[in-house]
Image (cartoon, rainbow, N blue to C red):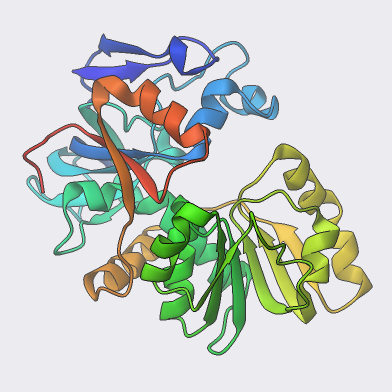
Length: 327
């Protein structure tokens, strides 16, 4: 089968399109014929081994799992003897990040617990755009942000992969949503349901006097003290994306700031679960959440797709298409 192979850490230039052996499913796994995948920030962080801690987790000199890619959608090609939830021919989607990655290829294996049936009415491309970003947004808002109807929620980085899902999920859960993005992305953020949109090139939301019950930082470069200023007295700040400096600020200083008053501040690591995939499936099938896809690339152009996402200009998700007739 064809796959995008990372023989070492580095820029997208190191990636190679190779012929590799088709995987065989273990007893609890399914073999997926991949129709589409998508690119996440985690792909280029892993490829570049940034931060260095990645080398301790995934291999010191080269990625232990050289075929990257987490988000996947496709058709079940074969099943292991212990698989009970899926049959050959089922259309599925899911997150491979906890089972060795491998979405940038024609086939991949995954434990059945990492997958769910593809949402009815979605194409394979749309389904491939869901898992990592949507579940990250869901867990940030629901589990860490304790979102409730009527809360004032601000999404910084509202036009990116996580941000576009966060805006829609927050609206579906009854919040009043403010999205922060650049000028050219404002109309798109409005179109997915944001009640208010702030152009960060013209206005600093941390200085305008508004206070929010929940701030989700999917991107952005404000220091932790600025976010703290924009929170209501019992407000919650959750970081899902940003610079390494911001991540360590949230990790180290967040708990200290949280102890001083009623505000809670910190970052999160997503833990993909089948239950949350099913939760998102239901929101997608009812039309409360719609995937936003910016660009599509063929498998051979995964390096270009990663470069585009890394540049920070994407509106929503960047999708890799393996089967142009799928969907």
